[in-house]
Length: 287
Image 1 (tube, one colour):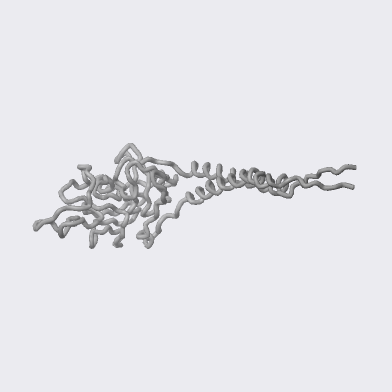
Image 2 (tube, helix red, strand yellow; image 1 turned 135 degrees about the vertical axis):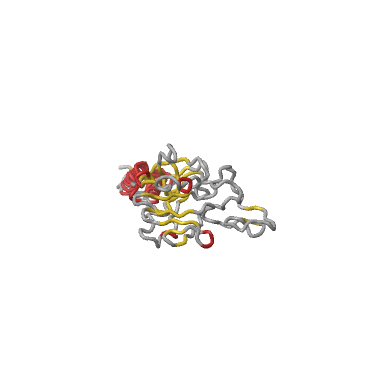
């Protein structure tokens, strides 16, 4: 009886455990990928920032991701989205510097903002405008961070002692406010141009906004750069501390990890076929 050919099956893993594992990887990856996106869509809301009042933290035209939260979750240092009819009919973006019961004052020694007597270190604020512009930079001209000085240069906060860059001060407008319970005192990071709680000091509530008006807290910039908006450490020693980071990092990990699993699982079959092309059928004699 002549010889026959027998093909050795499944030694390369095709159709066996390898295919099972690759299928599981694709399925799990798809669940993680889709679940991460759905989770993100439920928890986060994208916003486009139209103004420069939060520079350098957020620039005009930046796309931010804001976590939907209840106003009770807000802590000092948070960058929040809120709507207040006294301020504007549109959503606004500002930083919380005081909560109910706080006494917020400007300026302390060295031109710093104080909360309950504690001086704040605010590395996120922009350089102030040169003296001579309106209290809140009504001209709208961006500050260059420098001014020429002379013998008659002013020594008021924000004015340079000599020619050169202006010192960073918390506000060109002095104020002292005790924040009512359930309210928030909000400032822009670009203090020289931001129209914020300082612009409403003479109104009822002294420029404060109810917590209930806050709809979201900014966790990250999504466009044109991708980075997290960190909580300022200067607020940590105060009662209540700072807020915890949202779940954005976990959601991003789920999406990226899921995509990687799908790619690896889907590539397994073609990769094995390519590697197996050089293997020939081996004749086995049968007597």
